[in-house]
Length: 364
Image (cartoon, rainbow, N blue to C red):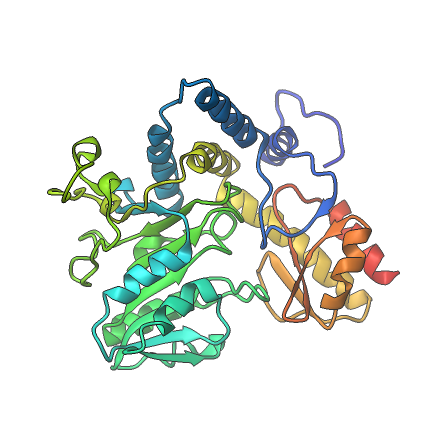
């Protein structure tokens, strides 16, 4: 992001770069957003201030931060905030959806999908969980399929699921859908309305602290799917402060009934991270991230390496190079080793110089 500070008539790209410069100053060539995203400066300040206030005995209203985060995420996903539940992990929400399925139901998953999504389904030993290659998941939906659970973008290698085909196949056969967008929300435009349940952790591409996750449920709050708020506590009541003792007599009339008791300091930061993604714009983030990924793919070809085919993805995974992760780390380049593959993930704080630095180290 070199160059002069833009003047008053700067274009959208210059504004994008200015905003990123304000929020991020990584000390390494950080290409591991698929593992953990960097926290924006505004998020760090908000969390520090909240912690200082709490230490002084003057805690801020961090429940308001939860609601602001819920609303911001709802806008990102194109749904009303009343359809968004807050929590801390994909596994918890996947387990909640799993609990709604009748005994003997068939669940279709992609082979080697991320464990937090699929393991809670396997732990119901009265379900028939069937894994198929990602490329065949839509064609594998059949009349016995009750649920299709798949990540929009595969964590291990960045492959993008054909969600349009999954949606149509599920509708044809009357199956419900559970889509994990942990590796795509923030850079790949998506519409939660296309699916029954959409789940994600937020510490990757939407740059939130750990301890923040969201579940988007249908308009009927999952009633027709048999979704039950099994872990509802006082915070899930329609009037939380009147629900602190004994049975919660009236659950929230929104997806808040599925909330976990929130990790408040994390949500205090999350509202600011989500606001940044809104300001940058998902379409602009998509263009930025995928251009860098394509630059890396082109450079790999010149070095004689071929990544896992994942056109249009911000994640690039290179077979056989995972063992070089430690070497790259010593050189100040942060990437992942996943299943023996070198995984690089490109996001808003990355530049063409970062791509070239990675290629230079790989070239020796």
